[in-house]
Image (cartoon, rainbow, N blue to C red; front, side, top):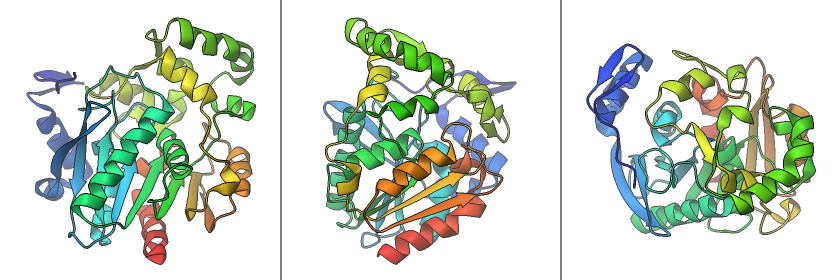
Length: 316
């Protein structure tokens, strides 16, 4: 069980609650007027209590579920949430199990478990609004979205910031030290079986310094300062990120898919993203943004939101 922290410092600022922290973030980014529109709810997924951050347009509007990337949580996507809400969508940004304000051992999950979380959120959206549900996945969240699409045909469309097949050896190039990873991969898999609960710093396998963030400098600084973000994941999670298989081949996924990426992305090389995109046989579109890196959805909202909204509106 994870209780939101109280009485904590971020840099030289003191906050009594997480909500005070979020208000400060909103003020810094110029969307404090939207804070009263954000709604919260909770659902259960495999006995885990998942926190949902939401902007609700109307019961008849299509719903976009934002699937967060590595280590982070729903409110980190407030900027794109607001733009999608203004475009006429209901928007749900969850904290998946072991993340943010949801329950579960911090950083302990598998891709299949995160897919299960997303499926429960899809069910929530259909029950509370209507069957028109799409996904917007970022980084690891895009991979979870793709894996969900290989299993659940209730999704009507998705936008993925980068995609990957984790069971393929080519994913070694997504790690910080790809040559070393190729050597260590069998040991990581075995360690995930023998010592599943052991935690591994995220900075050990991802180059966090290369991902630039406003107000923090880079993702490494953000992870160090934010009270809700993960600092590490379990070896069980790392094993899953090294081996997880989709429920059906990429070529058989028939859900309309838009893939977006920053040309300067240092985590997902464009050539790799292109290679996975080329395997998709569904209605699809690839959009590469010049001078943007892996923080595309966070740092370049004004650049990308119209393309994302147009894609979803075209589907609907």
